Length: 176
Image (cartoon, rainbow, N blue to C red; front, side, top):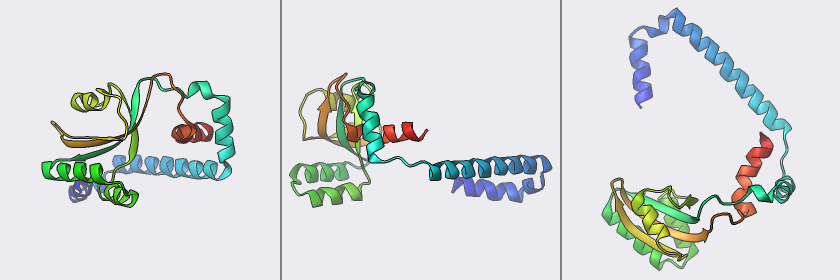
């Protein structure tokens, strides 16, 4: 909305008639079109399959190690304490994967990996103060709102990253 309002103000202010600005727009347009063409061309000529990714992983296993202790989590955030309590209670009593999928979809969250020392202090302490897995933590109040975290798994520093967790990084390395 801000971008659109600023654009309208710029047009109303007559910037559309500025020759120097129009020259910059033309240059940017050529760069944008050229880069997009090149990206599309390269993407259409590269074929990376699961076998390629697995082979790269097998040949480079040593480069796929965790640098710090960490955890695989589902992280929910809300500014409202009542919603946070609802999420926490729903997660604690949900043994049905369909209910959990609905909860995940309604709050637009993903599974993510976090490392010890990289979260807000209250969350870092809550997640890494014990070694339990399959546990729901929270709600935890921070300056940013309320957080509910489900710890799905844990890993130690220097342990092997499995292929599923390394998949996207390997794909990007091969593509580049």
